[in-house]
Length: 580
Image (cartoon, rainbow, N blue to C red; front, side, top):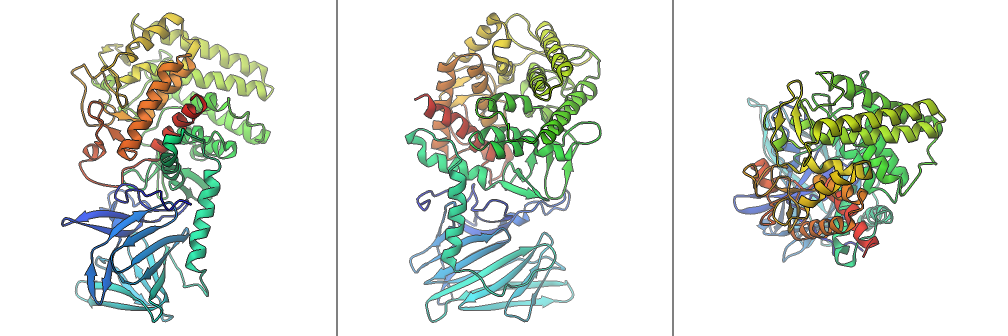
């Protein structure tokens, strides 16, 4: 069903929900090489952060000679194709990747570091012990030959290779296990075709919950869904959505809110993502910036977007299926989160929340932080106003009428302070906390208060919307630029200092809808989804040329397609389908 949905393996690895295994590709000496990847996070500072991305190089052989091949990736499997035959790789279980070769032999050549070993397990399988993982090579059809030699002085194995050679029936098969501690070959393994069918059935079941999009975006719907599905990862007993499996292999706090909105057709999963980070909420009430299988990062935080997500999801579910106890726990977690922001992010005690670093806003390089931090910006106050309003509704549902009224009062008070302090008569501004010195900025973030919708006075709404309609300022042929393109602070490459980026476009799109500005919202959705289609879901798009400039951000070619780009596409694409 999904065999025609081919992805770029250099930027979008083959993988499976809840699996650390995958298949990716990179260019080496002018030739593209394909690798089996193992992507658990490495502790920072080990120098091995990227090793798992390219752990097991794969070569195709015929009569002992290496053959050139091309790699095709679909949601179900990866195919390495050459004139003599092909190899298929399928993640049959979260910790096993199956290999089948027809017409060719396969060589896997792990590069072991000092004190890493390979050993014969005595049952036909071999175990390799890497610092990030252990891998078990199990031949299932044909023959496995192992080569290499051990340098005892260096405590290192050299020239290690595993050759999987075709048997009389013309094929070779193997299972490659991943584990951290101890593993053994199984007594039996399912047929390879059954593995393919299992993966396809799982992905098809997920696709049943994915919102519809216009017909001309049908193939991109599959890619967008895959970008979310493949990044759903299990940490402990719970699932979170990782940003990606490359340069940002972690689950970021506010991104779970974007992902919850993308699950509007699957309320149970939306609720799960929305509440997931509260398992890590600390005693002060703050959520970690990000979590992975190694760490919980409290060095910073991310904006409290939960109110925005709840406001959006109200049109699709009332979460009536959630047990009262669980609903109340989320309400209490949100209450503590508001308390943290209003206490620990208000150092000048003016009752206006602040960002202590640009990264805390999610707009890392935005010009509104050009004069430093702490800074009081209108986007944060808008998020807080919306969250307080949602807490008022939640309190009412829980039968707490006093807190219902109190949250509404606090929301109105913060909104009034925001309009009095951060609206200069023409636009929203950013102030340095304490001195309240005005920061000149052309950042698109100044328009995020549109999320407040008709809570904003009509005059302010119109003054915010008018500049967004001007071609060549923020509105580009590819969506909305992160910075005024006519200003001297616009940059072609970066995060939100100029390029077109998923979260910014999604939030402004939602803000315009909240204000009843459907025509402009639809135009932005049309332009941005078309740009994603043309660039293969580039995370960062040049706002003047439409080029994929994702690699310019990190100065290197890596796995850089992101799950929240997929989420943004699905939300905007489904709106286009519903309003064709």
